[in-house]
Image (cartoon, rainbow over all chains, first blue to last red; front, side, top):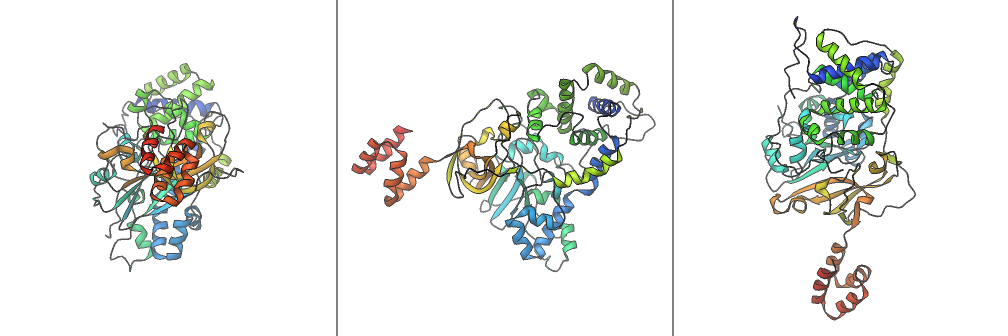
Length: 205
Length: 271
């Protein structure tokens, strides 16, 4: 994805890309024809830029690490347990949470498009939707994870979840050592988006 | 359809470039395309399955050479022209106008009620689960083979997972069937299962050991793995008679009674 047009606010605007021009043209025409409301578009964007993101998933994970009963509910009935924390909705109607252990590592993908558990992780990052990730993770997961900085010995079973239906997957990462005294909020701050997809560990720093 | 979107296992796309930062949109137009698309983009409402199929129907060259939101934009653009909501000429002229005056703001129309209601719509979601009377054909632990289906229309059975042996690990009840729903042919809900397939079953010896795929597949994508039933029967003489009688022709069953070694030969022939 090119970043060269992202420079906003200059007095001499650079020429817009063809995509930017087409998007502007279509939006202005649909608004003028009364088929779209500008503030409705603003609101959708605002929700996924500010309200719904991986912090939700991090809170779910931190709760599971602190509360064994919640963890059991989360692994047995993901959608309902996630709803206990107030999260749910579009692209998260059926969430299954899969647990990483010393013997099993889970990683999530969507080879056919870009399916991703929005209510707990927000919109997917570009690399998750990239042709490279979609093509390779189901073919050589251990090599891909190694390339992304996650070395897993052959003794660890790797499970790749290809989201081919409307079930959405989130990884419950392993709690790092030496974090037992942390509060739930402190634990949540350690949990990254990448660890919820399964391409990273949670580090205790 | 067998097109480039079905990319699992394809070589040549190089390393994965992980971007830094958490921003989900990289340019302002991407967020506008996302917002417009989520609101239906002035098009008649169609199921998500049909929207996915519109993306798949972009030409392979365009699909591969576009960024993610360029594909979303191309989908809206093509669908609006096809529906007659906008004309190609209208879009081209407006693009020229914005090219000549990059600072020109996009027209605005406010609809506060609509804007306020969106949070609830997104929060409600839209479940694909349906109740059906038909009993599930499979249960956890059942050995299955994915069918070698190659429809020209929409399907969620990726090429790399066709004709492969696996095990049912979960049953999710019945879900809307994308292969018909994408084409306006009805929801036809079917039982949905998570199937585990070993990477070595998918990719042969080139795959590393101790790696498994888990994939969600509808009942009509699956058949019972009869070879698994037969091999289990070979190991377990008490079950042998029953399974073999179900899966093999009577003449073969009779020969089995005479010689266990003969079974191997007959099975190979009868495949």
